Length: 412
Ligand code: KDG
Ligand code: MG
Image (cartoon, rainbow, N blue to C red; front, side, top):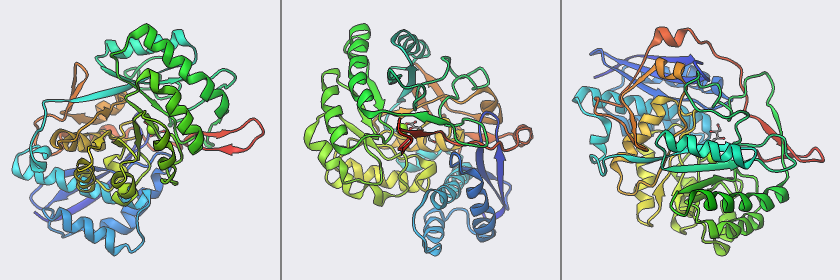
């Protein structure tokens, strides 16, 4: 099974996606996701200019060897562009292996450890009534765990609060509030940490009063606090029993979590912007986190995701893979196969793709009563309709950014 053709396909059905398609000499095709939100074309160049020429003629069964070859021969280590490109190759090779053997990928990772994976969705609302409606809408869709991002008084636009309510389906547009703000410049949002720290605990108090003690609730701090602020915030949320507090401090300074950890028992999740197992090394060994937020797409693919989760398992740390809409259906399927197989699965973020994306990427994945399953189709279970993909060319799209009241740029 030799790699005969490698194509990089860019499509923007509801948002931009970069997909690698490998074709073997026996006619099988494998898909990999290489989407880096807001920097998509950099990965396209990395793949077409530097990776595709190296793949032609390789034995598609040699997944680990190909991964090590691409990682070590590049010499320059880590980074989202490199690791997304390697991820796409890794996923496509697992897809091919599955198709060649007639087995879904999870069967190669140890087989199923559960019948389905609990997913959480994104509820948001500027004010409590909208937020409560959004939580209820998610419950009606079957979600049993809910991430909550409220507005903050005095702030016009902040991360995670949909500009208008509504869920996927309507071409994905109404729910596409998060990063894919289309335009030639990043959209400006505003920020005030003290207002946020005062307000958010009151929101969780109101949610517990309305929805009771059982509902698992999550919240994303999106890298915006200092270690001391995060420590105080985690402590102030303890009465509301969060499933996790995510990205409470900027991810670059991993030592910050030592301080946070000393002061709060609110469970911590981090890692959606991490690229390698080494970014998690100290966090796992020192038990500074409870959930690993790596995404297959930004972490080098299925192979390293399985390795980091096996390492985390030694410390009772669980998975909570990043699953926003900027992970394509291919990347999403890849981490569903890992999640189904590992013993230490925790939860899976599931922000649903829009109708056009689902028509472009045909998927075997299911979401039933709040639980995800990758399906039984050989490989990853995703096929790309290239004619459909061709209808939606790349659109310039940036993530938003933040400024404080005095104009200083802040973490977004
Ligand atoms: O591209 C950036 C988004 O994926 C990110 O902002 C989403 O934080 C996020 C999350 O938890 O889904
Ligand atoms: Mg996040």
